[in-house]
Structure formats: C-alpha cells, structure tokens
Length: 240
Ligand code: BGC
View 1 (cartoon, protein in one colour):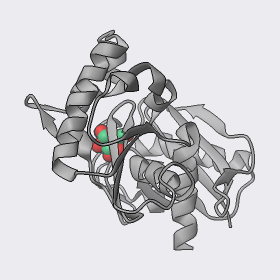
View 2: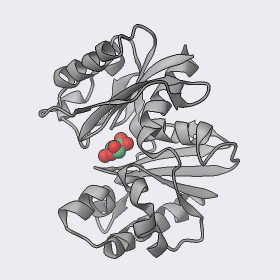
View 3: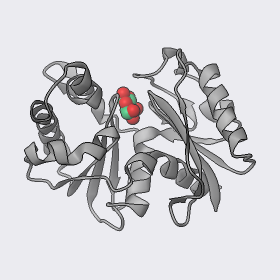
View 4: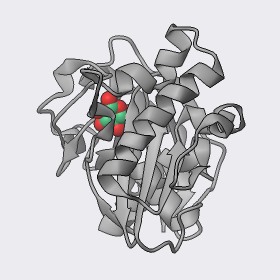
C-alpha cells in the first residue's frame, strides 16, 4: 500500500510517499522548516502544503514529538504547549498520528536493524529531545517517554540530547560520557537485548559510540533520516 508519511520535528517537517510493503520512499522527500511559533495551526498549514506538493489523496501517517493517544496529543516538551489536548488526527484530516520515536522504531523493527529480532529491543532517538520506542518480540509498547527519566535531578534529555551537546559545545567524548550514563540507567531498568540509536545523532554514530561501553549491544539505527516518514506511513497502513 502507498501512504504519505510525514515526520514533524523541532527543526524540520519532512514528508514523502512510501511503499509500506517494501518500507521505501517512492519519491524524493520534501523538507519544510518547522514554523515558529510551532502551534497546531501553523504546523497544520505545513502538513497541508506537503500533501498538496505530492498531489496526495490517499492515506496519511504523521509523527508528533510528544505523547499521542488515539490521535490526541498529551504532551509537548519541545514544541508549542498549545498542542496539549489537540486531536491531531482530526486536525490533519483523519491522518494516523503517533509519537515520533515510536514511528522511527516501527520502521527500524520492520525494515531496519531490528528486523525479526525477538526479546526487548529499545530504540532511543537523540535529537532536540530524547525519544524512546520499546519493543518486545517486535510488538511496540507505545509512548514510553524514556527521555524524561530523571538523572541528577533533571530530565535525561536535558543532560544527554544532541541539542545539549550543541548548546554546551561538548566534545563527542564528553557527550558520550553523558550518553553512556543514561544508557546504563535504561539498561538497568529494562535489560534489553539490543539498544538502537536513532535521530540526528545516528548519522554521527562513529564519533561517539566508540566511547560508549555497555553490556548490552548498542548500534546505530539503519534507516536514520527516513525512519520517521516510513514508520508513520507503516502505522497508517496497519490501520487502513
Ligand atoms: C518527547 C517525546 C519525543 C522526544 C523526541 C521528548 O521531549 O517528550 O515524546 O519522542 O522528545 O522528539
């Protein structure tokens, strides 16, 4: 089935039609900078322009960087607070809407490095925040929000996200220490068989993963940039 996948992020909103059976983009993706402010009306305008760009009138899947339950946004840590309580599915014309990390994880488990794996697999995305997607035998436990675990009395994403590395000018090695501390905590709580690193940081994995030492294998996600788009489309196809 062909579905338009749209990935809403803190800096860009990206979309492309996806062949959900193959897990592949059918056309080059379109990226539009995230508007500021990034409230529901502004973002809905961008989503509509992406739908129009591809001349799309089939099913649409959309990711959102917060908790989403039955299409309704329940948290918005890194986008405008006015999203909380909004029925995003209705706002986007009946699209399937899900958490951004959950979408990336779904893509990774169906088509990427997590394909066919049994046991607990955890995908963590390091970008503006830290997102999480937990799978047991390939089945997603949605909205786990592990970026908000407390470390030193702070949300982990305020210590170890990719944004914090940029803002504090941390070296890869220094940042990797924070990532390792966070991953150890997550490892202690969930004992996953594999931890996959997604989000913007996955493209630079060779710069920091060599400094991260854990008992659990930690590997970069395979799909990187396109995981959100593919996962959103996959979720919509599963519901159609
Ligand atoms: C949000 C999550 C989201 C993550 C990555 C966190 O601040 O609470 O829902 O998945 O950022 O965007």
